[in-house]
Image: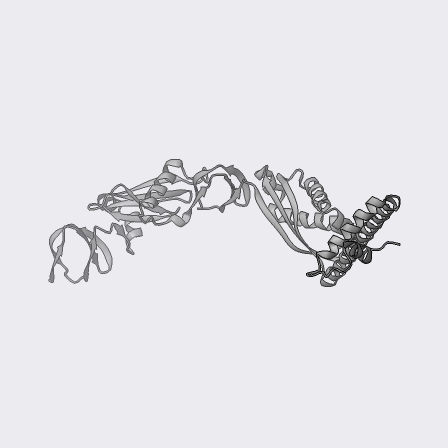
Length: 378
C-alpha cells in the first residue's frame, strides 16, 4: 500500500482527485493519504483568489450540495438576473445572466447580490451610484461591458432607445442601464442654440449667372421626442431644407435684384424653411448669407460697370462745377461793367496775384505806368 503525505497551508484549500474524479476537499494541515492501487492528485488553491475555476465545478454544484454549502459561495443566475459580486464589501464584478460559479469561503468574504434585469432596463439608482463611486476611486470593476453608463450634461438631454424604440427623454444627470438581453442606446442632444453652416452652394440666378454662396443659420430643438420621432437625423434634414430654400431664393431672381437687395435671400430662406419645419420640433432662429462669390469674368465686368458709372458721375459733377464757375464770372463782369471802382479793385487784386509769383519787379515811369501797362480791360 502506497502512503502519500500532503500539506495544505492555512491560506489554501486542497482538492483531492482519485483517478481523476473528485474525492474530497482537504482542509489546512498535514494529510496522510492511502493510495492503494489508485492514482491520487492534490491541487492547491490559494484563498486570496476566491474564484474556483475547475472542471469539477459543475459536478460539485449538481452532485455535492453538502460540499458546496460547506466550502463555497455558489452563484447560479438565470437568464433574467445579473449579479453584483463584492469582496470584503467592495464591488468587484458585475456578473452576466446565466453565470454559474463557485467562490471559496474563508479568507475573502464573497457576497453576490442578485438583481432582476427583466423588469426594467434602468439600473437601480443605488446600484448605479455604487458603480460610479467605485470608478471614481479608480478600482477596477469587471463585467462593466454589460452596463451602459451615461452622463447627460447641463443644457442637454438624452434620448433613450431600447431595442430600437424610443423610450423617454433623460434630463441632465448620471444614468446606468442593463445591456443584457437588449440593445440600449442613448443619444445626447444639445438643447442650446446651435449653428449650422451651409457652404459652397453653386446656384444659377434667373439670368444664368453662377454664384457661390455660404449661408449660416442658428437653430434649436423645441421638442426633442417629436424631432427624433418624425426625422431620422434632424440636423441633416434642416441642412437640406436650407439648401432648398437658398436655391428658391437665388434661382428665381436676377443678379441685379440680388445685388440691389441682399437681404431678400435671408427673408425668403427664413420664410420657406420655417414653414417646412413646422411640426418637426425644430425652430429656426436666424439665417444670414455670409458670402456671395461671383465668377472671375463677372467680377471684371461688374468692376468695369462700376468704374464707368463713377466716371460718368465725376464728369457730371465737373461740368456742373464749371457751369457754376462760368456763371459766377459772368455775374462779376456785369457788376464791374457799371462800377469803375469795382473794376479798379479787381485790377489791383489781379496785380497782387501776379506779384506773388514774381521775385523782383523793376518799375520805370511810376506806379501808374505799371498799373496801366499790366492790366488792361477792353
